Image (cartoon, rainbow, N blue to C red; front, side, top):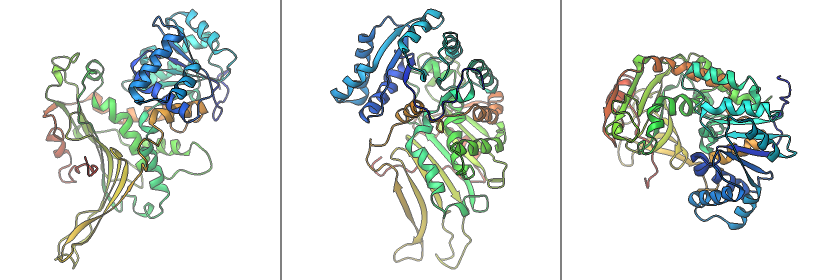
Length: 470
């Protein structure tokens, strides 16, 4: 272990310092998360905001009030006052040593800081180096936001820069999908129900498919999205992390990091994706979005077939699609089982295969599609078993609330390790090297027709399981 980097797993922080507190992420997400943690009685430490803007403590509190008012709606004044008292501000340029000296002064006697870097990845190394030179990284955790590189090589380069002054266990990489309650529910659904384990394998499963669909476009994020695209923005991280939970082996109970270990094992067994089994699309009108290049070939839709080379899943195709301006907003995973044989019921017809769908949004839940006799006829009809994960809307912890709370508590399980980051980049790297054309598609559809052809002879894309009122 690097000198000065003591083990902090399970040890609560005594101060939170947020770099980039004047930015968009803090405005839209962080202040809301801090307010909810305060309301739940889970904040008991000072919060230091750091940015280049010429603000003072009072200006930061005014900004926090505006941000919370815009995201919470009708905040409780007592809760806000308690939160505001925790806030202080340090102004400075991240390239100047004096900035980190002032940060150190603001931390006071704190010995277990969490530094949350809500800044562009290009500044990560600059800030971490500044913190280290100021002697502030001992016993610290540093939280960073994706993207963790833009390909395998850059992900390794970024990690080398961070690990020149930090240990791996000091770095907490946020993927907000892992903080979603319904994503965590998948683990419990799989391993708390022994009836699933005997059929959760290649002997009974035909294929698995995942959809992460948005019914809106890039809007005001043209500059960012044109440089990233759907593969880097969604599939390499969110989608693969969820599939890791769906497909991993059962975690063991003898240590707390077993889930991350099993996911890494799963990622290592994934084949590198085949560019011939990859379809890219771009919605019509994307090139007219502000800050998008007029000749852009960036994909706003991506669909790919993935394969896993292990005893449980060999030969079972995993289909993933993600995109913007699609027909509905939906995130879900469907495990399709093999079709039963034709028998002497239902007038000799064969019912459709059973499916288990796990819906992440909207209205999180799971549905097992079974078949029963249709009343008055010798025919089959669907008989679904459904359960909603969220009993009272708004009561479950939100992703940033949970992840920020875990970071402050010294809990690591929901953060992504570098080894998993490198494996997921390895899986998609061939698609970045040979992306192929971006086929046009109309807004409000399910992407280019080539995505249907990807599944030809195996299956077809399932219509998302949407709430009845949707």
